[in-house]
Image (cartoon, rainbow, N blue to C red):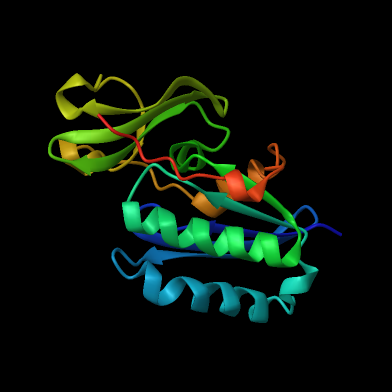
Length: 187
């Protein structure tokens, strides 16, 4: 049976989950902005313990690798790479913006500060506009957005990152874990 661990620390929330076969059995997400380094390893351990799973039983890890918080990206990605390498298991990296959209059709944004956002547009989970940095004033407010829509005073629908990552878990695995890199978008 496939047992998959999910990790997202790219934005304000700490997201950890676990699936066994075709069932998502653990899903936790809470705001931990600037505290991911303090809680990420603990949350992963808590997830495994709660599900009665030993790390050596994992068959795959799915992790977001940016864009987003510079430190947040590094925390989740480092934990995932180390576990994947030590356990000799598959690693799937997903854009944090893609994880926000899942298999839906929408645009995802993350506040990049200074009147800018990290932006990606997806149709049925497939990128139609590559993740990039945009000025807030460049955004088409008629689009459906998920993410940090507070920057233009608009409500966003709630996104279940772990559920979306679960739906995308069968993406191509990284063949060379050492070559996995974070997505740090620049202007």
